[in-house]
Amino acid sequence: MSIRERLSGNEAVAVAMRQINPDVMPAFPITPSTEIPQYFSAFVANGQVDTVFVPVESEHSAMSAAIGAEAAGARTLTATSSCGLALMWEELYVAASDRLPIALALVNRALSGPININCDHSDAMGARDAGWIQIFSESNQEAYDNFVQAYRIAEHKDVRLPIMICQDGFITSHAVENIELIEDDKVKEFVGEYCPENYLLNDNGTMAVGPYAIPAYYMETKRAQLEALKNAKKVALEVAEDFEKISGRKYGLFETYKTEDADYIMVIMGSAAGTGKEAVDELRAEGKKVGLLKIRLFRPFPAEEIVEAIKHVKYIACMDRTESFNAQSGPIGNDIRTALYNAKADCEVINYVYGLGGRDVTVESLKSVYEALMEIEKTGDAGERYRYLSLRD
Amino acid sequence: MSRAFKDINEFNTWQEMNEGCNVYESATSQYFNTGEWRVDMPTFIAEKCKQCLLCVPVCPDSSIPVKDMKRLDFDFDHCKGCGICAKVCPFGAIEMKKEEN
Image (cartoon, rainbow over all chains, first blue to last red; front, side, top):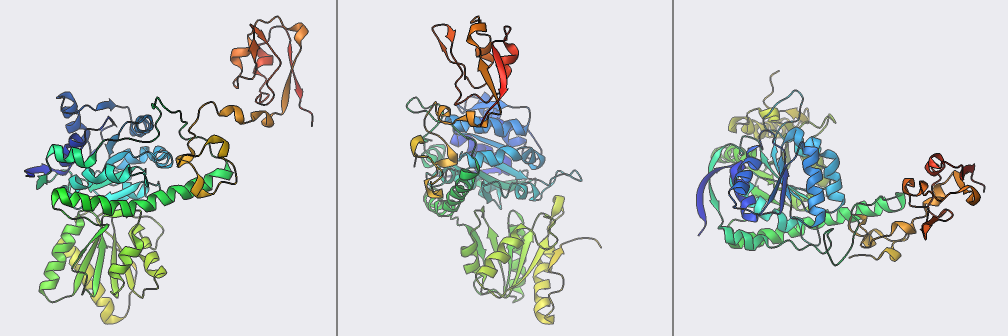
């Protein structure tokens, strides 16, 4: 029987980490993810896990220590937010290139400046091109479930890449919700032992990790790395299938909500997807054919699969919780437009920047996005295709 | 797939790359002839050498072989010509010269 609990998102992820019982956790505290290493170090102090907890002096050191430990053959994880992830920037690329399946709990928070501790996705988007697998969670339950599935995806022999499990700072990390935990022994069995083929502390084989690659080797190595990341799509689905067997909860690369007969679709990621579903329900009650697609696996981007689910729709709103300063679209807007263009789909795509630095995302504000799509259909004029939501002007 | 060091070369395709360019053997740096980088070349003047061996530990590339407690001539496959050995030699037994060719 699963365990009924009420936990904050941070506590839920810390419980998943306890159940996984990793070998090493180097971490440095930063709001709003501080509680994760805090709860976890209590598990260490209480003897509930065998993990070596390394209280490092910065996030740069946290990821460096994680790389060293993982290369040595230890299952390693860490947690961070915002500027903490930014300070790891150099090491994030090394972890991915060295093919080290480290798990990172990212509690999304705006990057400075202006300095701000609240939620947006600019931290994760700054690491978007680092070669990590990135999975986003809507709720505390999803943050827990995604973390339990993380190592099975990252450590798979066809993947072997680091993985970032993201949840929204404060919105899910600090809100207490009802949650269903899986029993400790079932999680342990599901995650399994970490048995890498090659690792530095292997008595039966020597290896060198992360050697210098001259121009004759660098490009081939990056292409091979891309292939491993692409493989994560297939593996994530296989792992989700196994996860459903122990939890009863179903996961895919993304979730569609009332999209099949929809005329207007919103593509969104993270906690605001829940708000968006409420907006869909209210508009559906008025007879409006609206739907929502929530991205779960953001890297690798499941482009063909998403296109298949939305290409029948004429009006699409892409919701980006970050500003990427190319002055025409955000990361989700970019990826969706490219995917639709490649599929020669004829859709009007409006890109919204929303919820920056913790700006409230309400049912009303997301309903206004659908209403804007309907207005475009009525007038035939798309107007500005790159818009800000809930902005004073 | 792990490719043996002897099979790693510039004709390998991307499908043939080891994960992260990792090398699954030890002591492979000897196959990398850093001597090709050299601009200045150290010359060992054996008759001035007192075999104090001060030059040996300062060489960054372990390019001064020692046998029976005596240093031999340089390993020019790996010596980069940095000149640290010539600086520490108290007896003028190492001279730096422009590399010819």
